[in-house]
Image 1 (tube, rainbow, N blue to C red):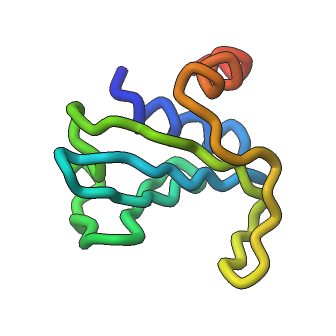
Image 2: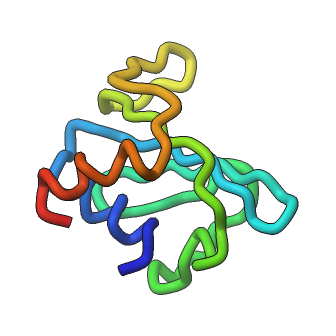
Length: 97
């Protein structure tokens, strides 16, 4: 299963959380918000078709921040910041994704 799809599934099981994902796509940095099973790029356009992945399989996830929802960019409520994929995986396993 694609990493971003796993993060989307995680947010379906934890709807009180929003994930902010920073990733490299080639040499371009992208930031993606993942909430209630959907992903949206905050730095580039997002396709209107939900079947088109926001991050390609070759994207390198740099860090994941867990925040409380609802998300307020002016006053974010962080649960954890700067998680690597390796540190996020046990949380994914914990909810069964």
